Structure formats: structure tokens, C-alpha cells
Amino acid sequence: MVFYSGDTHVGIVGGWDESGNIEIIHGVSGQNNVVITGKAGFTTIGRPDYYG
Image (cartoon, rainbow, N blue to C red; front, side):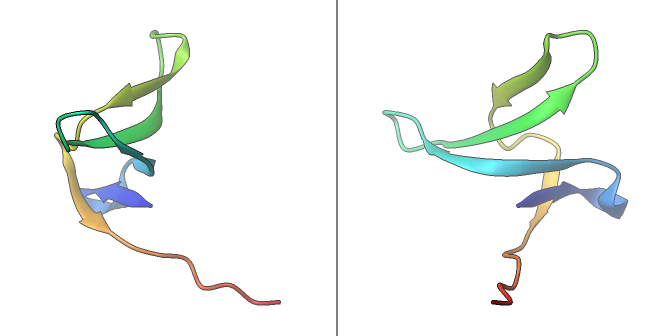
């Protein structure tokens, strides 16, 4: 998972494009709700713990 500064927005790392750039899946109002973009705006990355 990736986050904007202040945790105001969250995305999921979806993979990398053919040039090796990271692709982020996240919601954006007004653009069909879900988009895939680059890392612009995201400042922090984290990995959830799994309890199971």
C-alpha cells in the first residue's frame, strides 16, 4: 500500500509497467472511480501485517 502525505489518500501497488515504473491503483472521484497512475503524490509505502 502507498499513502499520500498525512495519509489523506491510499493506493495499492499493482506492479510495474514495461519501462520499470511503478503502477498505483487508486480511487479518483470523477474519473470512473478507479485509475492506474504512477507514483506522483504518494510519499510513503507500507506492507500490512497478516494475522492468520
